[in-house]
Image (cartoon, rainbow, N blue to C red; front, side):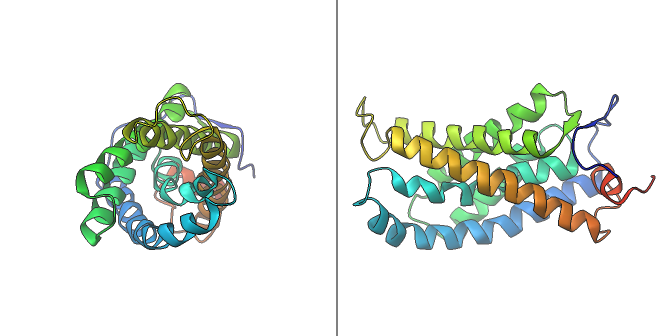
Length: 207
């Protein structure tokens, strides 16, 4: 059984009801984690920023994992964007310091960043490297949105400068990449994903 370098010549890209349901569940579950991360962000930021401006980006990956997780499980175009937006909208409804519109927009940007990697592979290649790259690109999108909306200009060593970018990329690679991959493998091994090709290939079963 192999769980990496999986190539499918003809992926089925049409959404089913179960695809929508699972992507929605991922979005809803992620929203609660995003909300808790939002509550913890300010004290964490106040602790890390005096050490190095931008270091608080190391926690940004906690807002990025819904997109790669939904994509690697559902394996349909738009799954990453859909789950990330659902998570962001629900996080905003639960209440955070960034407001509804801002949370929706950054979720959309992050989901699109994650989606690009899978789209570039034509939704045919599924392994830890691809999922990690998805987390990295979602992280870059997260940083870019934050940098632009804070209008800090070209101060690359500022709060949203180069150190924030690097910290966010590391966080995205870990939380939205490596952790997501092993979380997916763990869930699939329970048999909970047997209605998906992503689950059956881990367990070595047929449709």
